[in-house]
Amino acid sequence: MTNTLPSRRPDSEPRADISNLVPFVRPSRPSGLLDHDRTIPRARIVLDEAPETLAPETLAPETLGPEPVDDVYAKTLQVEKLPAPEWAEYERVGLGPAKVASARLPKLVVSSYRLLGFAILTLIVAVLVGYIATTTFYFLNTTWVKPVVISANDEKVVTLRAELAAQENQRDRLAAELDETERAIAAHQLFQLEFARAIQTDLQGRQAALARVRSLARTAAATRTQIRQSTDAYAADHTSKMAQEYEAGLIDRSTLLGGKYQLAQITTSNLSLAERHADLRQRAAELAVETRALDALLANKSGGGLSYDVLKIKREYEESGRALHKATANRSLLQTALVRQDAIIAGLRQSSYLRAAADHATVALVPYENLAGVRAGTTVHACRLEMVVCREVGRVLEVLPGEVTFDHPHRDTTLRGQLVELRLTETAAAAEDVLFVGGAPLAL
Image (cartoon, rainbow, N blue to C red; front, side, top):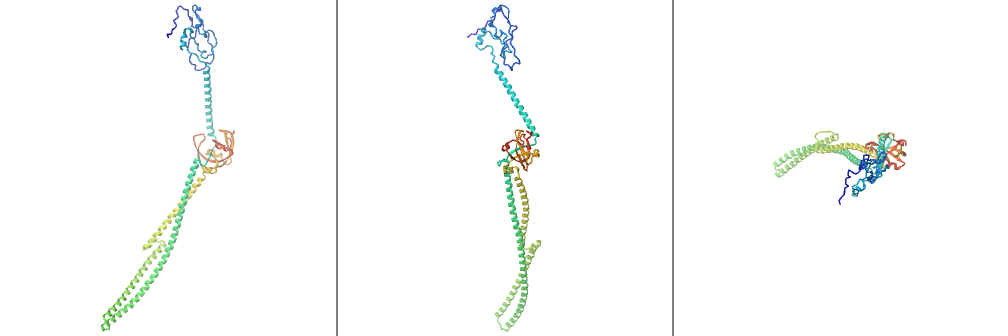
């Protein structure tokens, strides 16, 4: 297909004076609406020659009269349409001037954007003002408390109960050790007492034995002397008589030897008596030494010359004394430790969390700076809109002992304070973020 371009107009043909026409401008997408409406002026066509040869259809329709135009683009731009016969082929293939779309939809979109932006800005300002107001209020207010419901499964309660159980187990171990030490002390004291009695009895027995041995030794010595004197006289007389009779032939040699044998037996008997006397004296000396040692042991005196048996007895006695002293000192330590352990257990049992969990009570966390206005009987209020539209929901029962730490309800800070037990007339108030004591914070 061959496109036929329009031929150039000859110079002899009449031309239109278009010096007063608005230049042709291709419309572009506007960035906003006009501040005021304008009307496109009517174009003036001045013909140089043969005005009848210039057909009316060669001009754009909008140049024929000063009629107002509603199109927002046409209010600012003069659009010259191409002559239909001359540019029809270009328009048919889509190369004609761009068509202006309707301005109602963009106008609606722009209005919607404005409304949405205003709403978002209003919301941001409202949130910012609310945040500043809330922060300032909680910075200045000293009547707020933070309610909490403490259950048996609460982490702090479980931790405290585990610690309490461990401390009670430790106390039971200390009590068992103290009982064992008491029994050891009683056993050692009984041993010391019985040991002294046994030593005293042994001493008395040894003293009696010493007295008997000494008496026997004296008797044996006297008897030995008498027997020796008698036997000596008999031996001298019998020896002389037998010698005379043997010389006279009255007795034979056998009888002489028999007489000498009798004399030898008498001498042996005297030796036996002397030996027995020596044994008695040795036994008396040993008993005397043991008696003195036992006497010194009872009197707790250190002396020399102790026998081996007495030394063993003394060692057992001294070991028992050392064990008794150690057990007594250990008992004092255990008694002191038991008192401290009882104090620890009592402190844990008085813990605010454990008391609240045991009583199934509703409590509130109160920072120290807000504690001045909290006492038993103080009214408790809850607010529906953060700090306004408040109502009374209960009273304070008791300020619980002990210190607790908790997070600020509106700031990322950790506070120190105490727990207070509450009696709420509205159970749902325990789920509030904060409550106020002593009245509504803003009297609203």
